[in-house]
Amino acid sequence: MSHILVLYDSKTGNTAKMAKLVGEGAATIPDTEVRVRSVDEAKPEDLFWCDGLALGSPTNMGLLSWKMKRFWDDVMGEHWMKLDGKIGCVFSSAGGWGGGMEITCQSLLTLLMNFGFLVFGVTDYATKLTTCHYGAVTAREPRTEDAQAACRLLGRRLAEWTAVCVHGRKDQHPSNKMAERKLPS
Image (cartoon, rainbow, N blue to C red; front, side, top):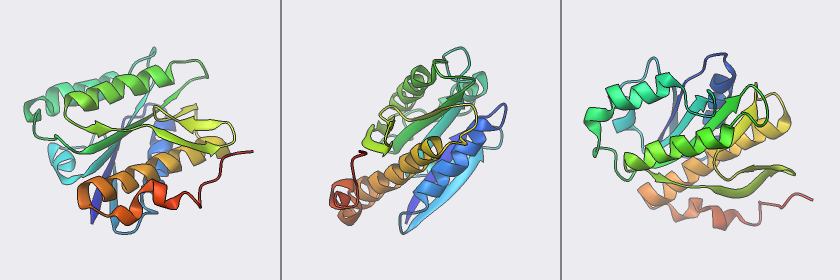
């Protein structure tokens, strides 16, 4: 059984909606248990429990939120070197396009790498013009089909990589599903 944690901060509710969609995507992979937690309610035990982590933050001036940074500094700091080898990915929303969501994603990825997470990019297109190379991103609420598909794809890929890398379930390797994947036209 793979354990996936979707951990997020959300000021306006937009990133929380993304987190729910990421969790939905992860739950599509058999033998996967998903927990969605706000950074306000998360405990170190949630991070020890999970095999894979999707980390989400609103974009605040091109960076992750202060609450998310504080969680990793103050709550998880003493647990550094205890999370090595877990699988991680990220997502972010901002007030508008060009607001720095991909920069926020890169800062979240850097944070995860510092804690020993194995992070990945997604090469698939979620929709014709939507990719998740650095993580799922959206301007404001994920109300478009593109934004929702990106969140679900990110969650699904996290659960696939966790199943393969942590539990040796090679049947869940994304390349085995190549026939199902279609490039957008």
